[in-house]
Length: 420
Image (cartoon, rainbow, N blue to C red):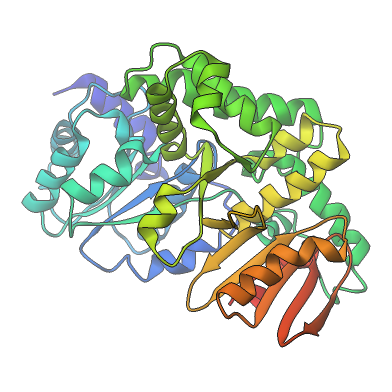
């Protein structure tokens, strides 16, 4: 018997005594998508930024299995990185005097276990009726390595920061006619913007607390603990320097040579650090759009901080507020592309789905600012473009092109209407 594991199992699974899960859960939109995959044999993995609600999501799913009469096992490796996964199942089996087979197991912070992919794979193959859920605070080991080691055995879901509609649901705010509620919506958007989309900040209005939470409980934990634990990082403050530069200027075209000189590290080290930060969900990378994917890979790239709220909190500059809105939209649509021509004509966002949709984010409108949008539409033979404005809303046709303007607050509230 392993007393340490047994004690943690008993503490972490209070529903073994009570028969129910005592957790306050607010609805997340991704739950509907996950439900389609739950009856399948494959492992379900959740990954995402720290503090976005992965553990709460696991326990919501866990509670539904308890209602169905299933026996569930929850274990977090946050302080148990040296514990073998198989030892947890063995201890459970001894505790309840039953064989492993029909249970549902939830392993939280799984990335802290060395070679966790191989160990989970062995359990998956050994117990074909066992349903397995895993979660981790970084995609560093979950997304890329899991797909290689657990090929065909895992479905991975990214748990994102709250969307604006989810924030309103958390606040229990009901929105009716958009024109009637416009003032209320704009006020709520300001609140949402400062929370960064973190569930635990929804009801906290104090800016100092918000900033301290995002910096100390999220960024610094990732920069000074999570990434160095997995990768050789000589000086974590260099990771912090990269993030600070991007927070100060969201969406900048990154010159690796220049930035590496500014920070005082080699170009190769900077490229590695940027990849670590990207895989840890701290920054987002946008490629310069081309029909040829390999060409996009080689062109200049833009980077945005994954927590736009920090740029808003830490800058009083009105121009920076405009960049903040751009950053907010980039994260909301999960943008992967922008466009910049050799003549320096630009489009902020290019969405590539069933069709191509160019999006410009302009909080201070000037007609000449749409030259890049029009040139891109002409170059790729597009009929529709979108401009995210501060307040203007109308659609106009110019030389066969249809350009729709929509305020940021309305776009964030009804995003699917404009991008699908």
